Image (cartoon, rainbow, N blue to C red):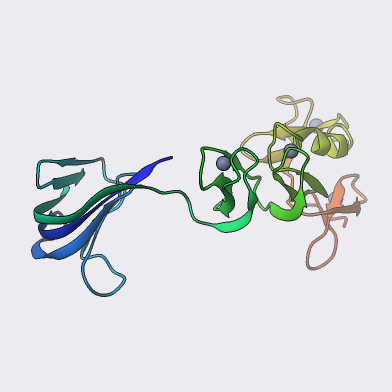
Length: 239
Ligand SMILES: [Zn+2]
Ligand SMILES: [Zn+2]
Ligand SMILES: [Zn+2]
Ligand SMILES: [Zn+2]
């Protein structure tokens, strides 16, 4: 578990960068696991000084001095007297979605990941995924993802892989409107339906994160949109 370094006491904070200042006072200084440094005084939510994810941050000496450097910016927090100097375990904080199958810690969802607050367990979620109120046999929550159809799978890709399910619905199911060859499901940063004759035929369409509702006259699938079914080919003229 990563930890944050918390030092509180009387200090002089010096900042050199796009502007320069020196401040003296009793503060709480926090260095996060990503080296972000925050110096808080007695009022308001805003730190009196900070550096976000600097190139380096080190604490040395007794009483301690924290030095952080990011490009030309330097932040120095020199303590004269210390009342607290502790390392505390910290984790991502997010919406609670259940318990960790490994350690019974809380599982939280934050910016596209599912992470345990007590151990290293972490799973990246597919974009647009919804965490369901339903648990897989492995103990993790199940998730819903829409890729042409709504799929429900385990949050652990290794436990209940999503990819083969999408393949069954889209791989070699539709024909290329230009050459008639199969459209393959291609994974390249996102999901695409691309012609099997590539590079001779360069037809490729990005697969929308919506439900597949029918067929266009051109042969391609149509997808639900707010104004009715829309052809996979945004330039198609025969809806
Ligand atoms: Zn855990
Ligand atoms: Zn599972
Ligand atoms: Zn083709
Ligand atoms: Zn069409």
